[in-house]
Image 1 (cartoon, protein in one colour):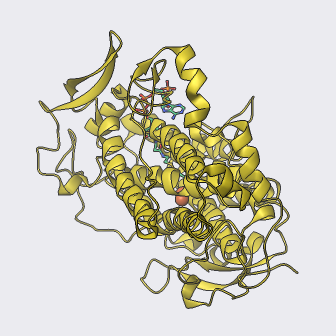
Image 2 (cartoon, rainbow, N blue to C red):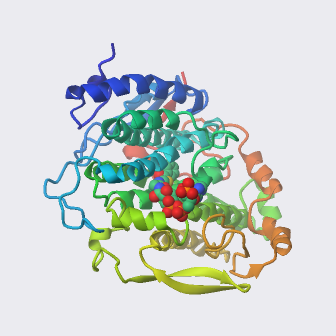
Image 3 (spheres, protein in one colour):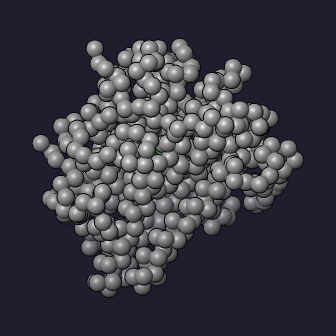
Length: 474
Ligand code: BYC
Ligand code: FE
Ligand code: FE
């Protein structure tokens, strides 16, 4: 008999909750089976220098030490409760925050939690082969850190399903371990989580762009009137910062290396850059275009009655809801959305309530633009004229008002044929993927060594040196 309170660090008084313990006794072995099948490939015996959340205190949520990943302690942590917290928006604004699921919103709430939960194991599945071609031990440790924490985020949602949703919650928790990223018959719920993450450039782009969708969605759910969801998401956000750091700094390091080699050898075109075994900036732009476009689809339709209901019912707020100065009801407010009309992109004001997905997407894009500006500093400092840009919001969209339209990165409305004939100027072609893959055929694991195509980071993890043994292979 496993002692789950011992095995699962938690601040939910797990030891006294018999119903929850019984539910976890069934789910935990299934999770371990899923990790063995779908977690990082061939990693079961590695000892990895990981941080583990042991409590929600500032000194407790990042304990560092060597861990075999199957023995990682996936804990259940909620931000401590504020007894005075209220529902801060929608028709229940001003009433005490719910400690239990409001019966009339049960299925809506379950669906939000399932959608959030589904993305977490999906990303682990997408990344599972990348350890085999890591550019350094430092990077290998970072991807494993991201993977175990996404596993913990799955635990966080499964806790809510088990604790608050009874039998159908348990069924949903099982289904979260059964869907598979990219599977033809039983795929993950949201589009971007069924795309392959075939190489480390894609991984860094994913953690910069797609984990940041995670941040914005978690921020919106951290405003929820359902207090256990809000507190769970608040704590998840502490881990999300590192995932986005891995992505942003990973891209920064690739750009830095490419600029160094370009300047040193006075290279004049991307073929010459590639010949030196580093990634040309045109390819960086194509990857950016792809990851940006599939990620902004994750925010849902520009006009969504689901989003309106989530808000009026008090289940899902806006980004930084309580810092916004308005009525928090959006009774008469409007918000501009784009639309394609007679071959042109036009804006149109719609009720702000239905445009909440679009608003969150816009908040997200503002933050993304800041990151792209920081990347461009690398080229500026190196004296390389190339600059990365975000494509138009309508480029390569499958969800919302732009779906079914063919928009160039500059925002022109095109015919399908014209767009398709240009798509590999804008997004990675099979040949581009093959080139990136050719740089990543084996792993770089000598202490302190980094692959040729990426610069070392500025500093190590937890003040360890760059030549620290971040992973022991055994
Ligand atoms: N792909 O009314 P609409 C993270 C569906 S990432 C496929 O606009 P709604 C992480 C939609 O479900 C954060 N289907 O949708 C990152 C709906 O289906 P039904 C994840 C899509 O509900 C990295 C229909 O289309 N968390 O944590 O307003 C690593 C109509 O759409 C997509 C959340 O997403 C799509 N992209 O908005 C690890 C938060 N988009 O009703 C982790 C919870 C829409 O026709 N989810 N559809 O069956 C939500 O709040 C909402 O479900 C969404 C969609 C914002 C995603
Ligand atoms: Fe996550
Ligand atoms: Fe994440």
